[in-house]
Amino acid sequence: MEIGIANELGHVWEWPLGLHFVLSALVAGLSIIAGIAHLTDRKGLAKAAVFFAFPILIVDLLSLILDLSKMWSVYWLYLNFNITSAISWGTLSLTLSAVCLFGFIIDYFKIFPIPKRILNLLAWLLIGSSVVVGTYTGAMFASCLQAVPLWCSMLLAPLFFASAVAMGAALLELFKFGENISGWSLSLGAFTACLMLILYITELYSSPKATQDALEYLLSHYGAIWWATVSLGFIIPAILAVIWIVLRQKSPGIIGKSIALLSLFGGISLRFVLLFAGQGHF
Amino acid sequence: MSKYAMAVDLEKCVGCGACMVACKAENGVPPEVFRLTVYEIEQGTFPDVKVEFRHDQCRHCEIAPCVLVCPTGASFIDKNGLVRLNATRCIGCKACVVACPYDARFTNPEKGYAEKCSFCDHRLAEDKQPVCVQTCPTGARVFGDLDDPKSDIRVALKDKKIHIPKKEIGTRPKFFYLKKKLTEEA
Image (cartoon, rainbow over all chains, first blue to last red; front, side, top):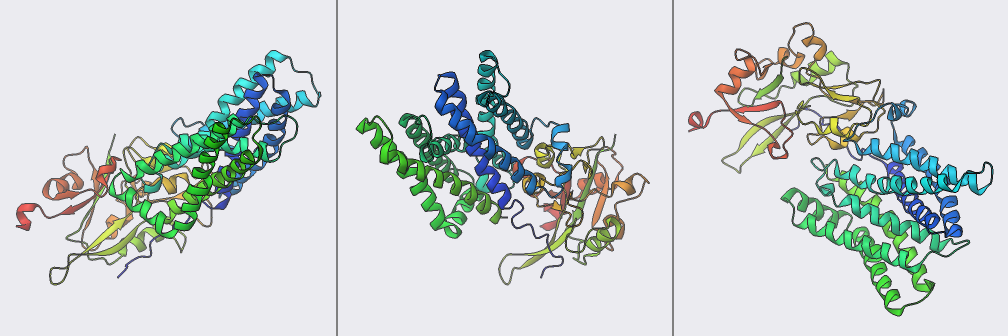
C-alpha cells in the first residue's frame, strides 16, 4: 500500500539537453581542430572548422536554454560561478568559445583586421575552452554519481572528450570543403574514444552493486541500442582506424568516410542512451 | 548557531500521512507534487513479515550534492546548516533534482523552479516547530538543534538506534530514522 504518491521524477533531463550534449561535443571537436589547424598553418581546415562550429554553437546554447524550466532567468548563469558545478564551467567555456570563434569569423570576412598575434592567442584560448566544453557534459553526468549509478564514473568526462574530438573530425571528413582532415586525427579520435568506452564499461563492472545493477538495466531495457552504440559507434570505427593506419593510406578515403559516419552515430547515440537510461533507473 | 536536524521514530509512525497533508497546506505545494512523502515497505517473508513506513524528504545534507552542482548559487547552506533554495536565482536547470540521492527535489510545475523541504524555515524564524512535527499525532517526528544537549532531537538520538539511509555515500544527512535499541529488540 502506498500512503502518498511519490513525485514522478521520470526523465528530469529531456531531449533538449541530449541535443545540447551532442552539439557541445561537435563544437568542442571542431573548435579544437580549428585551433590546432590555425596554429599549424592549415588555414583551409581551420576556416572550415570555424564555419561549422559557430552556427552549431548558437543552436547549442539555444538548446541549453530551451531545457531550462525558468529560461528567462538564464542570465543568472553569468552572474554567478560555482567552482564545483559542471554547468558553470560549461557556460563559461561555451561563451569563451563563442567569442574566440566570432573573432576568427571577423578575420575571415575581413570585417576588422585582427593581428596574427591576437589570432594565435584566440586559437590557444579556443583549444583551452574546447577541452572544457568537451569534458563538461561528461562531468555533468558524473557529478550526479551518488544519485545515478550508471553515471557513477569520472571516466565519462574523458570518454565524452575523446568522442567529441572524433565527432568533430568526422563532421569535417563527411562534409569537407577546402583542406582535408588528416586521417591520423580521424583514426586517433575513434581509437581513443573506443578505448575510453571500454575502460568505462570495465569500471562499471568492477563498481558497487548499484552500479552493476544499473548496467544490467541498461543491457535489458536499452540492450539493442546499447550494443549497436558500442559495436557500430566505437569498436568498428576503432578497428577501421587500425586498418587505415596499417594500410598507410595518404587520404582517409572510403575507410575514413566509414569511420566518420560510425563515429558520429556512436557519439550521438552514446549521449542519448546514457541520458535516458541513467534517469530510467530512478 | 543552531544545527537543525529531524528524525522519524519508525516504531511510532502509523503511516497516517498527516505530515504530508500538513506540509502541502503549509507550504502551498502544487497538487501533483510533494515535499514529503510517506510510503510503506514490507520486510521479510511470511510468517515473519514486518511493515515499516519510510519518509522521503530533503535530508539537509552537510555535504549536499544539490548545492555542489547548482550553477547559480540558488541552492545554498545557511548558517543554521539548512539547505535552502533561492527561487529567484533558480533557473530550472534541474541539476539538483538529478543530483539528489534521496529524490527529495522536484521542479515546481507552476513556477518552474526547484523545490524541496525547507524544515519550514519560515516557522523556525517564529520559534515554531516544522508543521509536520507539530501535526504528527503519535509524536513520531522529532526536531531540534543538534548543538543543544537538551533538545528533543538530541534526547531521541541518545535513546534510540539511529538508521541513516544511504549512509555510505557520505553526504552527512541531518534526517534520521529511529529504531529500538538492540537490547530492547532482544
